[in-house]
Image (cartoon, rainbow, N blue to C red; front, side, top):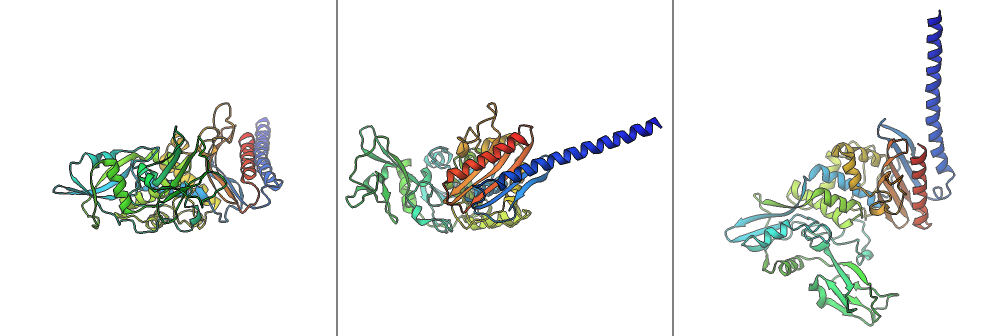
Length: 441
């Protein structure tokens, strides 16, 4: 009899604990719901949110998670995953063949070739030390120099470099004031195209490139001592060959040949270092060029659409919602993804890499690196958010990983579209809500 009573008491106690834990879960969920309901900022525009428990593999909270949003640079997460599936440990630099005393080479889209930060030199050293006559064969990339849906009036801004098959030094000219307070430009080749123009009268000193050429004009105004500006140059096969000759100090001749079936490949930068550079400062140029590198390996041609369609068909066909994906960087407003699909993608990234610490090291880290370096105060020196931001006019998004004070591993996608208030207000509200979840969940 006593044993039966004991069993009954333990069963009731176990049931009580179960209800208590379930109720606690509901309270936490209810608190998150209240955060959104009572947030004036989050209720004056189109907001989507998904919060996922990585350990228990279940959605904790969702708001418009099945609706499509303009992702901006959250698009780079799709580029990153595609590269994980298609590229190896290194990025291909050049395709080439040797015919007698000649070395004929084709571009692979490699963004690391003489990149200002990555400084990959394997491809350059190969050309320089080949002992052969050099022939560059352009034409393997036949798409437009801008992606679909890009803003053409941003052509003068550093973040919108043209897409090309063999980029050099980021495809961006650097203008700066030297120690003698003279305006300089790098590469020095462009110095002869730097002109002062009395009809050009900006509000402050800045340089502007002609849209269809590499004429750079600057105003009759005092040059600020610390002046620095980066402007994409107008690309062409002829310019690529010329810049290569300036760098290699030897002739590079243009030749038009279809890429050979027996080409060999030279590899350049370590892939992880390129991914880190793409994700942390959100480098649009690298994202676009990486898709071409994938295309080069898979199709022996350079085509962004081919890679995106291949990825959607073979790697992303199990996402909750079919992505509308058109470019590598997210500059296009044609891109549309749902928060729950981004959550699924974040899970796929972890499954592919199989090293959570490595994934965290590649992402912007709250309070430490990248685009969220000044956001999210670290928890006793330990960061707790690793997330990709995405923003352009009237849009601000964050998607990534979160570890709570209680050690719960979460993934989140926080999308904000079509607001008219200052972006800093929306960004700070995102930080407030994510920090609350970190503290309370």
